[in-house]
Amino acid sequence: MFLFGARQTGKSTLLKERFTGAVYYDLLNPDIRKAFKRNPNTLKEALWNKAPATIVIIDEIQKVPELLDIVHTLMVEKGLWFILSGSSSRKLKRSGANTLGGRAIPETLYPLVWPEVTDFQIDRAVQNGMIPRHYMVEDATKRLSGYVKVYLDEEIREEGEVRQLDAFERFMEVAAISDGEMLNYSNIASDCGVSAKTVKSYFQILYDTLIGYEIPAYRKEVKRRIVQAPKFYYFDVGLANYLMGRHRLRRGTDDYGHAFEHFVMQEIIAYKGYADKREEIAYWHTYDKKEVDAVIGDAKVAIEIKSSELVKTKHKAGLKAFHEEHPGCRLILVSLDPITRMSDDIELVYVLDFLRMLWDGDIF
Picture 1 (tube, one colour):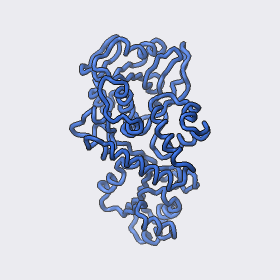
Picture 2 (cartoon, one colour):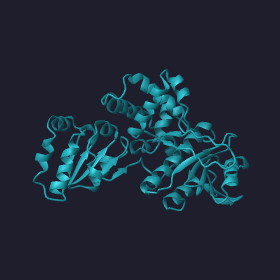
Picture 3 (cartoon, rainbow, N blue to C red):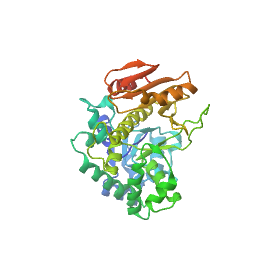
């Protein structure tokens, strides 16, 4: 199994707790990494006499992709079971590394999600994000600063991904402004002082290192002309907040609203991944400014996300417009309004009720 996930999502902790008797190699350990780089066959020598079905964990496998050929041999000839974790598939792709002939199932570990947190606090989740070390503290600013530094040093500089680290760091800050927004490469390039081609390559680095992802536009056009550009999200709302300098979010502000939307989308994305749902998640935006934050599948469910503590008629406009073109769609408005109820064929759902419904499988 390949277990991928961004840094500090808890991959190593999870594997050590779940597989206490496994043989474990951590490639973040410089001595272990150097030994395997010098001679990948060292892994074969170390494991050749292990019993069939022995579980072997190799953490941060992208650091020494040459090991995958040895892993393949040990799986086929000795019947060993491997769990290979990493924070990036980029180096594996670029090196043409052995993908184990389809024998390894890829899985993704996301930041913490609502069912995993006892005494969940929505405002803390919206501010700090859900990376375990960040959610657990009152003020995660210093930890987020360290997170970005480690990412730049170990994922970008160490792997030689970009020539100018300062330009990439500036790009990350500008990309945060586009978090939850439609991508415009030319505008971002202008703000960063690099070419649009470079910006596209930078976004691909974020995707490959699992730091960001795209939400595509819903493309089924009925009456209104719809926008086709994708939206960008950082993988965790706390990271986006830090890069934008949103350190003290307050309910009722635009900044809180953007972060609240990001958090809810983050939960939807994680649920889709963990539940292995096949429906695509898209967003809908028309040229006359009607929008729905999330469309599940072929207009199966439409979800609008508002941080208001009192739902008003204007908040329903996007869902109503979408329903005119897709009358069979289930309509949900998620908010901080504490009373879950029906209104104009729209389910008005308090955010904590929505999270329970989502993880119970009652949304899709």
